[in-house]
View 1: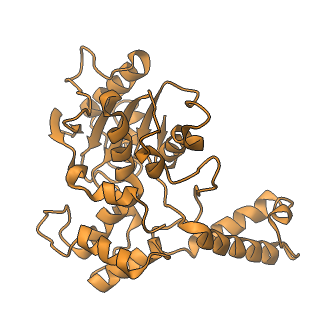
View 2: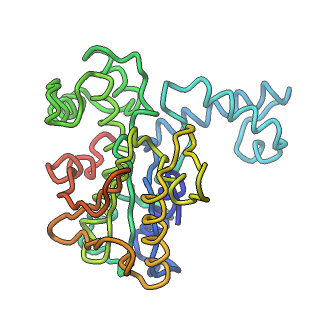
View 3: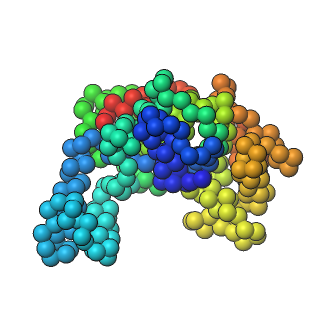
Length: 313
């Protein structure tokens, strides 16, 4: 079970070695907002390595020229290097994360899951939040130029043709048709789908007959707000940003989780029916005032199929 980067870790375990070394050592998993920010290509990885070695040398007052040298640096100095690089990264980017190494990660997880020869028998319970991308998006994006600049931060090696493809996927139409009403929210939806929510679509397209999907919609439904509901501990519980946890919704989510862990299905006597994702792309809504509403996955319009190709990489 994992949330955010923890869910992203499970995603990488599921697709480890491209499935060529057998299934992962578990039979079911719970992934909540599984995410990671792809580090596009070897050029970007080399660039990051250069800065890590540079600042490790500066902070340790000695020459750190190789990864082997870096392994000799004490933890406190490594933490300073990490803090400095992350603090100087573009808004919403954390720089460090999983990368394609050709072995454990032979390709991005979405690419592995798209391979018709990749098979998995895992049972999955998958969650996501309605507004995954806002925390990773600058509030100062107010124009298409700002939106494009943000794209180039996230995908620094993407050619102009790919940028144009993304503009076509997320056009400057602010009538809620695409889930946003201004440029900042346009960027937030793009970030959410490219780094978080489409990961759930890739998994469901592969194992939809054994996956259960919920969307956490308690306002403001930001990234990781469902954690406060997962670990609800009675009246007075709050989310990470101080919002009160609605006990009824939290207890239902906990029942779903416990049922899934113990039986392989989230369904039980005390909660509304939680259908399989299946060919109908069913998603259960968890809200403060109602539970059990089923809707069609909003990720079926084709955007995830485009991201899955990793053309920006």
